[in-house]
Length: 95
Figure (tube, rainbow, N blue to C red):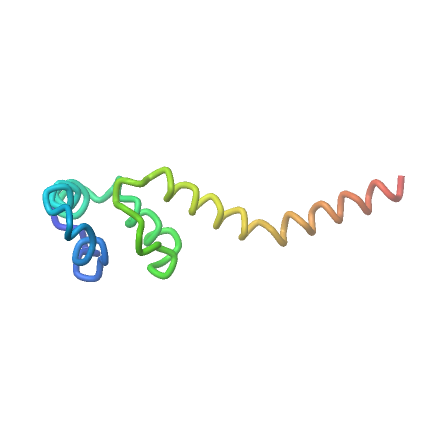
């Protein structure tokens, strides 16, 4: 398997878990030097951009990544959802 294209700039790969070298190596082998399809950091980077990847997010914390992605979708839908509900209220007011 190929190395993740994000390894050169990935904070986790270079700076995290220095106090737990064995655990860090296992995570790096699985997520950074293997398939990155299940990497929580990679998921957010691809969907939202580097600035949205929390520095303390571990590659195996997919549930947290999914919450971040869901929150981002909710925020993006906010103004549209509000306009839609205003329109529905206006229609009901005319009835």
